[in-house]
Length: 199
Image (cartoon, rainbow, N blue to C red):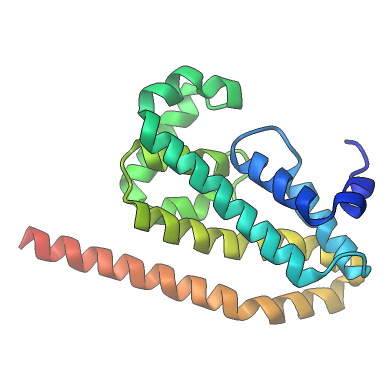
């Protein structure tokens, strides 16, 4: 893998934004490496940590939403026909579709943490007819949880693992707690709605 430091130090936040968006669209770019390196550079004072987190999360949300609306517009048939160009095999597509149908927003949230799967979440959620609000909320929660994790790994290496992990976790704790609470409330509300509909 080429040295990405000159790229980030020269182009900074636009480079982070572009690489993360392309990664979420399924293109073979080093998304995790760029986020981790950005965290490392932030620990060394070459980038601003809040800026890295904000740009990374925004790019992840935008990239997945582009995929979602493309899937919603063109449907399963287009994914099956053209998916091979972005490494969406028929087997992966079938598994992702089953997960979206069964688990809904929870599958979107979880997919964020699985390399090679996160790029499927948006298009498949759109193609399977997931409601826009469900996708937008689940995707945003996943991005807000995942980006600090990926950036935090690099920050830990750049600052000194013990102190950095303590700092990053301390700053990210409210975000993780809010994400867990939001997902729990969404699941409970979904069960109540289904129960009332069945009654």
